[in-house]
Image 1 (cartoon, one colour):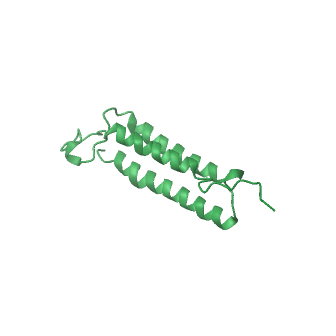
Image 2: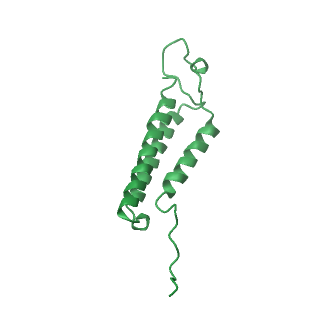
Image 3: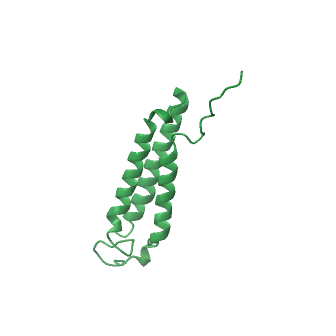
Length: 115
């Protein structure tokens, strides 16, 4: 007997992780932050310099990273994202862990680069 049910997508439960990560990476490329300490506006002095041309992005980029982490966590609890127990736990742990590490070690370190 033929099975009429479509096969589940292999990226089921990873859409916010993938789309959010690509969005943040594209945003950082578009904003072109300072990556060398010598290029910081406060190099050799004191004060709080920004790695972006507009200092408001120092607030918006970490906020977007927190939204990305939250969306990744929420998506793991949605019913369509569930598969077998072991597969769901593995995928959720990997997606949440990678998004937290990328946000804290990547974006967090970039934001505090000139501060």
